[in-house]
Image: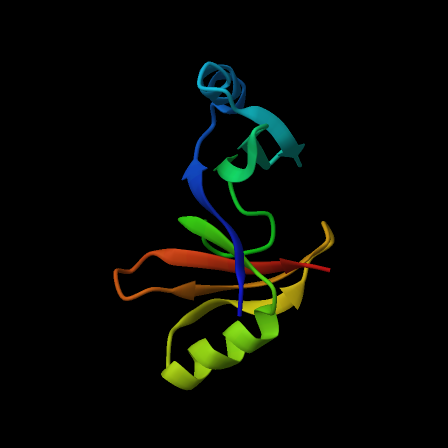
Length: 115
């Protein structure tokens, strides 16, 4: 399994202000669905940070997102390990297949792959 990127997810109602502030650090907006906005470094596009008001389809907001090459394999592995799934494996309308799992620290991890 390969990890393509890791992005922290910050719950925020200040998307515009965050975009302006992180723009000072070299980040640019690369995605905005209204409820989630992702900023990335133009020189290193996998260096990302996301700001969300509330996850559109999940019962909780994830603390971080990890994009992998085989989300189904990761899902099977965490299930076998007995980890707590907090959002089921499903295809989302914005073009990702994902699930959310709670890590040993209690953090919610959004594991996704683009479809």
